[in-house]
Image 1 (cartoon, helix red, strand yellow):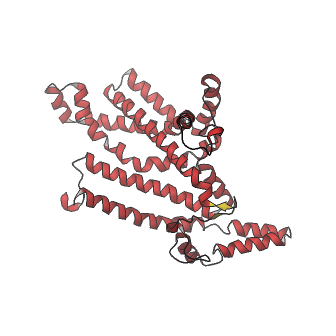
Image 2 (cartoon, helix red, strand yellow):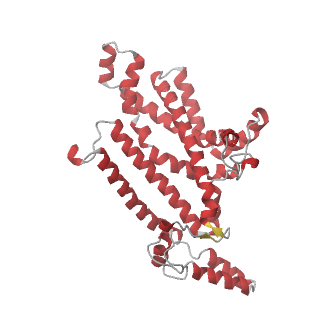
Image 3 (tube, rainbow, N blue to C red):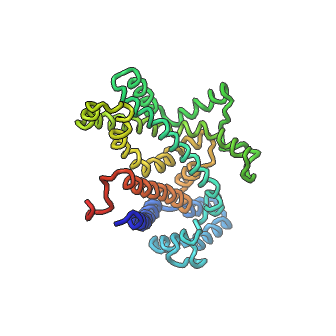
Length: 342
């Protein structure tokens, strides 16, 4: 199997997995008794607001919430016609948010690319920090460098993200005049992209990137250190040293290449973990990402908004996993495309 065929195969398996995930997400979202409209109707009837009850009943019919759960799913995805014909996820209709009384697409439109931007910056931070610190800690094992890197790593793992956000919220603004809150100055919101807007976004990204990426960088650094130490203890390293290979070249040519595989494999888990783990950070720092929207949707049982955000996180997971699989095949010659090649 060639690399291109393998890439196409992984793409279609990703789509199949995404379809299965959509079934699970929609089923789990509907497991709790009632929904947003049912709860609203009960509240309106208790207070005698007949007009509100009529509107809520209309919305239940308009969005097929009065139909069996399996039919609701087919309409939501776009496999079956609803009251307005074929209008589901695959047609670009993400549903209606009853909590915000707006289409889901309008609520998450800007938040989606801002979420991707924040988390890509955090992933870049994780790799830039974890790679040199992990290699340095392994190369200088049981020295002050190793102990210092270990202390920094454990501190990053032990400090809750929201607490770190609050600390930087205060000291970063007080002593370094770092802007806190949002991802750009208010004057640039709704404006076309410009160099001034890019600089404003880059400045606002400093604190969220550090806060969201710290725990991931600490965990990855510890993992890389452990893998490097395992590789450095193997006989081929001793043989290379005996032949006089320079220490820096020895580290880069063999042990680092072998220990780097988990770095690549973690791409599939890193992005969704950061998206889900940054919900509280987004609330604390007032970031216009999908985190606050997901929190509000889950609290109010706003099923279409919650289901779309969860599907977005699932899509990030699957895309990240596919990219990591393709990169592993390219980086490690020991990995083959299928069982016939092993």
